[in-house]
Image (cartoon, rainbow, N blue to C red; front, side, top):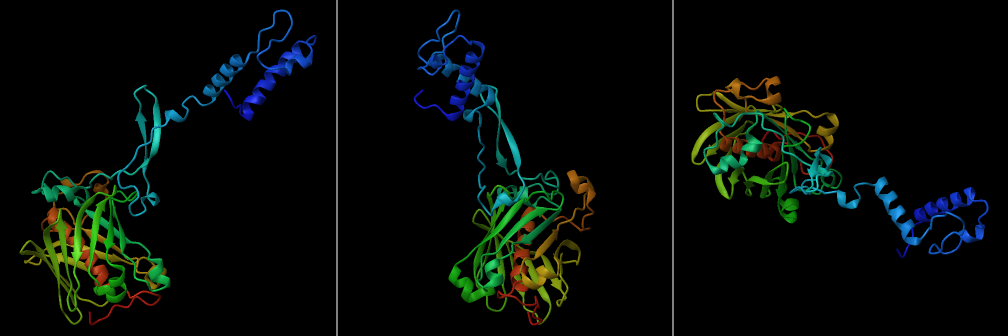
Length: 359
């Protein structure tokens, strides 16, 4: 070895000092010679350079048996999306070919579904099978991030949301991120066109919602693999909030909210039976006064108690006449995004979260 570390010199010094202590008749000057020479005296072992190097390497292996090569890190797809480092993950142990177990990086895992997909949620198409890991759940909690530039400077930012299953609140099951032009956001504000990508916890895109520019009433479209599966049209009214939900060309639900400070939006079928419900939660005085960081609970309910699995059995679900299909649930998520932009977003800066009655 060409270079010795400080630890090696101290270790060698201890060995040489111990020999000097037990062999008083040895001249101390001999110890300071090059390690290639031997210490003179009867029955003394030779302290050669190669011998000390082998002992030092052996001692280092004992202190760190795995070494740098013992670690094998696991890469996860989409770990940089939506700042997932702020959410919990699990440390995965990997087995190497030589049998050594090494701990890798913290990897996000998709929480298990809280509803069975074998009965009424059985996917009827590849598009529904793709969104099943996110939408096969009885309750979804959608929380919007705080936009500091919008809060302080009035600069309109892209909206971002985190989706959490109420049965597994430890980690998110998905994310929503708006994609829009920075100039149109500042000029058109709430009427701006945008596309929002809905992903799972690992960052894989499941479906998109597209909201074009609007002047009087807004519309938002749900698309899976580039194919439009449904649309939500807002119907104009002086004070009521009315939305029509379509799957393809067929309307499957309507929302008629009385307006003012009523924050519950119930989806009903043609017979007036409840299908699902969207509630906007009160997050506290500071959040409501200073920010646009709203929180929405989508209750899909379950008419079959045997379909609930895991921790979902401890939560009382909404009573519905029939469960929504996976494609209809994707349209319902699009409705929640439209509600947040239509009624619960402001133009930026501080101010009371007043809702215009004329809307």
